[in-house]
Image 1 (spheres, rainbow, N blue to C red):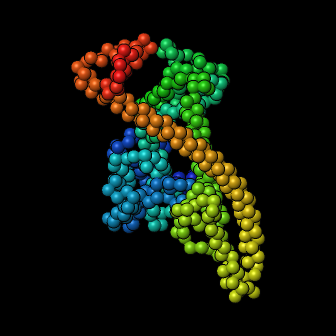
Image 2: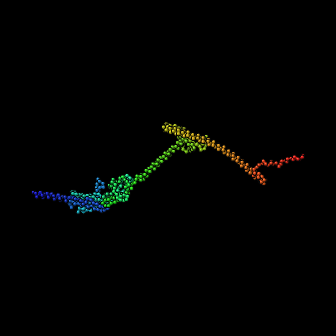
Length: 451
């Protein structure tokens, strides 16, 4: 009895062992494979079917999706009938090394890159053999040396400011690690300040001082190799921030220019308004009016002639209000409100005109006073000129007499041969000389003569 029970138990164990060895088993030797970028690689995969002879065997390789939640990407599918289906994404870059008798289903990839850095899945499907391990996975790690990192300064390198030094490699697999090292101005390594932090390629510096200036080197490292970048940090006083100062100066200049433009525009508008008011009220004193534009309804225009503008001919004022009223009475009912508005405006302009007219009268009176004063000065000048002309005539007569005297003297000298030249040279005095007797005077009769 005991022998029969032992035989039954041994048979059950044998059946279980046989069932476990004859089920389909798919396996990949390693959980991770590492290769350098650009290599041609082979990921091994083996399978053991329940039966050595099978009519149909389907081998499939799948790759992990690009984003979580998306379906897996098909690499290729091979059928025992000889058909091989390769997806467009891996066309020309993937092939299958298979041997159904030996249970070999290796995946070959050519010129691998970072896009192949993912999990791959090997699956085998055999009809009527769907028990056991039907698939196995592995991770492909594409090794890429880190690229030369880029070092930058985030913040203003000024006293008492906080800044960050960043270091980042664009590529690298596995992901590189970063380490910062500082050097002083003498190029000697120095320990970081107490509050300084270095994490994931970001070196944070707090409360900058002159001692923070120096030379900083960042090293990016992974399994392949390492790469470095460096920068020079010069901490300046806040007054040396020329960029901000230039920005402030530029803003002030722009504001001043905008203000000038606004003022010029306002002055031009005011000048145009004053010209329009002068045109409506009349031409100012001392200017000629040229009627280049038609008269607007309700305006009073002042005209002057080019000649004869004096106090006896005042400027002629042409009033067009009557014409305006005649035309406005035709459509009075429709334009009454508009007419009232314009009438009020006209009254304001008329008051302004009256003020300017009174000012014009004052200026005209002043002009008349100045003109009368000018006439008085002109008459005084004429009198002085007449007196000057009289004196000049007298001088001319004196000159004529002098010339006539000179001619007579010359003639006498020539006629008497210079006998009387001494008479003109010496002072004339006839007190000692007896009076001369004319030649034709009869002689005085003698006392001794007896008639």
